[in-house]
Amino acid sequence: MPTVKQSKTLKVCILPDIHAPVHDQQAMSSVLAYMRSEAWDEVVQLGDFVDVHAISDHNTGKPGAIPHPLSYEYEVANNLLDKIVSAARFKNKACKMTFLKGNHEFRADRFVEKHPELKGLVEPHIALRYNARKIDYVESYPRGDVYSIGHLHMHHGYYCNEFHTKKHAEAYGVNIVTGHVHDFQTYSKVTWGSGKTRLATSLGCLCVLDAPYLHGRPSKWVHGFGVAYVKPGGNFNLYPVQIIDGHFVAPNGGNF
Ligand SMILES: [Fe+2]
Image 1 (cartoon, protein in one colour):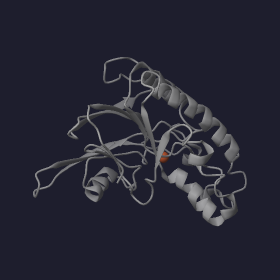
Image 2: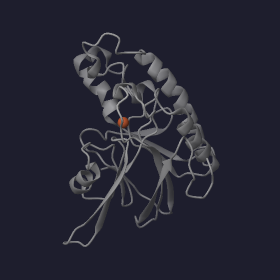
Image 3: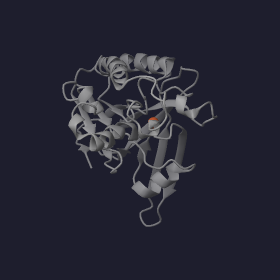
């Protein structure tokens, strides 16, 4: 379990599923403006930064199911990542950046298992040069690697049933923040043995709310992200931020 050692209060921006190139332009633009306005110690992206739709197994046997080649997805993601890195480090050049692997990045792993000759060419963290950008990459999905800052634990998310935060609170047994399901949901659990409260929180997403694979079906997707302060002893508070029609009121009261 990768863990951050710290000697001061850390201010962390947590970005859930972005799904470039089908990220929501207005929601992302508002979040980037907010990120540029404050100094961050760390920015964590919870996985599904890129959609990786072009090589999805879901397209097999469906002519016309791939609207854009993978190169287009990475071109758009690369431009967006330039903006995210710039905003994250605008007021603090030393801002740490950590991206988790989501189930959409995992599509590339499955693809290179079938096409080993393309290993090193299609994985998002390689194509988007996370190393050169000083972005740490955590193999979060599906094996369950959890990224932790103090008592704040983050994972892409694994369960996607209706009460997925209950499953996450029980399965992980720690305060866990996830993306994956694209909804806003929270669940608390107090264990009799320890008397400790465990919170599981799903932060929504930053992708379009009418993704093509929904085929117009209604969903429970909402836009959101998180801001967390983590004290040196590990205590933290998480401020989930709901984005309505592309805009939000930040924890500092500012309008974005
Ligand atoms: Fe997602």
